Length: 432
Image (cartoon, rainbow, N blue to C red; front, top):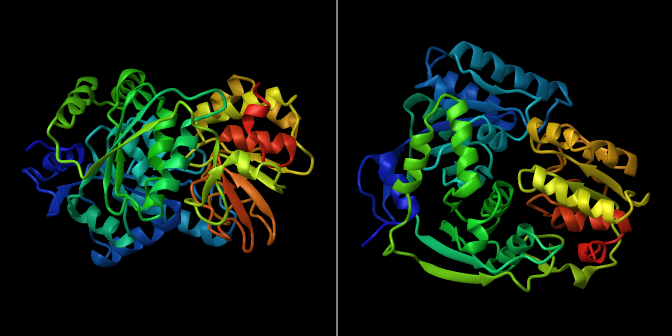
């Protein structure tokens, strides 16, 4: 019997043939921590090693400051200082401070992520790096500290669900809408510890931003990892980034071939979707899997709109929002607080070069520095009790961005259409 992508990745990382369901020790290619939780990882490492230990490989460790950047309190500032001093002591050069943006995105841009890599991180959405076929997963602080000592961690080999996505999105409909549909159908526990291989012509021609969107919410269905084989322009982009970081472009392409699933791979199940008739979708309060068509909740009033996060903060996402704003006359409703957050400094610079930022500002939008932003109430823009928001983030549990507040999750286009009209709006009404 053949092997799935995750089995081949674990074969490489463990140095032997693996079987579904068994527990195996894997070599780690990259172990990362962010400003939220990173300080505790450093303190635990020092405690375990009596402050005398050296990390197993400083070049395979990275820190990212993305949740609370820049710091908004002395406590956060002190935690960030702990990380900076630990990195300096250990000779860790991959420290992406408050000016860089969301960690996973920044590490992709800096060529630190390759197909087939095994990557640990303190973020529950590390698995969005499956967008380039890396097995990345969020773990606890103790696992991170332990990996810095030995460079290994153990995993159970998951079963794999295959999802084939075909057809073509109509105008005003996006990958986020398919993802929302998928979350609604699978439910919060529908991918319990499964690896998911996404394929089909929609996936094969999708951009990096679309792949990140799709893989970023596997966590919300209790999945372990979503995997997409890099191809075409995505593979070219990735190979160039790895090469710029001192890696091998040929190695990147060889890795894709090495982890391509076999024709007789043992899939748990195969699901097929045709997006040709898909409509804009929305996750209603207060759960990602409470899914309806945007048209079914159109007209509902909102107080705030946020576009950004690790799920929808790339240039493609902001460009889609810009297109809707343009169609709406370059003005958002004065009744709605509208915030846009790019995922990285590179994305922000491209927004500036394209002339987006000035237009957004003139329209009444708050355009922020690159961070995780309103994924939680720990950032500027938290909502008061009773307020209702629309967001492109990945979770909308009650109080997630403010105690007693409620959030709808939707695509950047739907979010901007809502900002323009002041009520939940199908973006196709503006894009006609």
